[in-house]
Image (cartoon, rainbow, N blue to C red; front, side):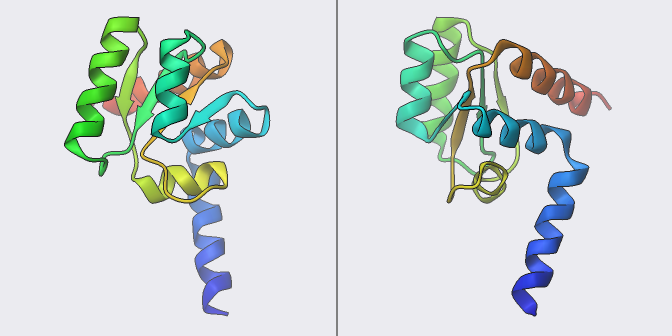
Length: 118
């Protein structure tokens, strides 16, 4: 019963959060690179339109993606935790994800920008 309550709680978070819902949609449509290696490759080969790094990722990981994304001119944001990003896409912990679909990337970026405003 305890696990059902936890699952319902995480499902409620996903329903309320458009960013996580759109990441899940991107994953189901094979338009998402998840994990450090896949995300870095997507940035390098030009398929990543947006990169999201977990707020609790290591400083080295954050620096790596800020530098790569700056060089390849890919927008990068810090959002959520490793656990939340992983849950949103149906995987274990993920420190970074790259969105490869331009439409989904624009929609996610719009929501991320709205969250930054006070």
